[in-house]
Every structure is written in C-alpha cells, then in structure tokens.
Figure 1: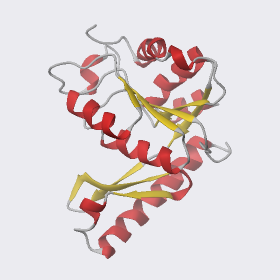
Figure 2: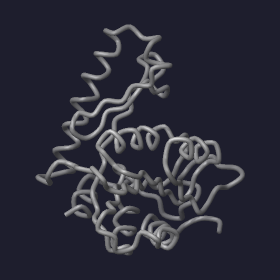
Figure 3: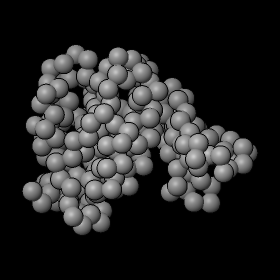
Length: 207
C-alpha cells in the first residue's frame, strides 16, 4: 500500500487492523487534535466503541522547542522527562508550563465543549493520530493516558516513520501502523487529500 485517499480512508484501514477491540465497552478511542480526530472518528464508528479527544501539549525546551522536557494533558496532568528537565532552570520550566497550560485549557474548553472530564481508569485507551513523524506528541499522549489511569494504552496510526514507531513501541502496550515506508519525509506525502482540519470539524465529529 502506497498511501491513503484521506483521513477517513485511513481510519477505515486502521479499524480493520483493530478489529480485536470491536464492541468492547472498556475501550475508548482518543483522537489527538486536530488531525487525529477524523481518523479516530472512523475507527470508533467502525468498532462500535466510544470516541473522545485527548488534548496534549508538549513542553518544549525554551531555546529548542522541538526538544520536549515533558507534556501536559487533560485534567492538568503533567509528565516530565527527568533527563531533559533536570538540565533546565526551574523558572524556565515554570514559564513554559504556565504558557502551555493556558493553551491546553483553551483547547480543552473548545474541543471538549461541555463533555465530562476524561476518565480512563481501568480502560483500554486507543490513541489515534493521522501519522507519526517524530512520535514526540504521541509519546506524550501515552504518558498522559497512563497518568489518567488507562489499564492498557494502544497507539494506532495509519503511517509512521520507523524510528517513531520503534520509539512508541517502547512506551505503549501495542502499536498498530499499517504503513511504515522506507523513506518517510512527511505525513502528508502518504495522503492524496490532506487538508487542514478545522476546529469546527473536530467539534462536529466529537458531537
């Protein structure tokens, strides 16, 4: 397989791979905003399980934001990577956390739109995104899902770079990735239609 028509097609392919989880009431499919939500919606519908959203903010090193020292998630969950965080000044950490917490709360209000707080205690959480480039956000999402009490954390993505898939395999209980191309480049290369996903679209799919 060389790629997907769009995110909906990718979700249908993923759902087939995840058929072992069909119709289980202890399973919740969590879309990572924004691009993961259209994929997750198709997966949840095909499996007949609950759909929700997981808002995660990566905590980036101030002078090198792509390097994460931790993550924030639903309910103010904070996960730090001690190897990176211990090299930072406490004031730098506090400033980044404060800024990202404000953005997280804004997005939670928008996307959760009156939904109850996310509770994963004892559940199987299937984290879905539209692709894995570095895997940093998905790894943060795994840590957040565990902190929220998930009994098992599964990462499911239509396409991923080999390094990123291997990275996730170390932190998640299972990783489903039907397409691992030898030359990755960017997630968008593996979709015929890969438009921006709007906030309104996300809210509509979750509604």
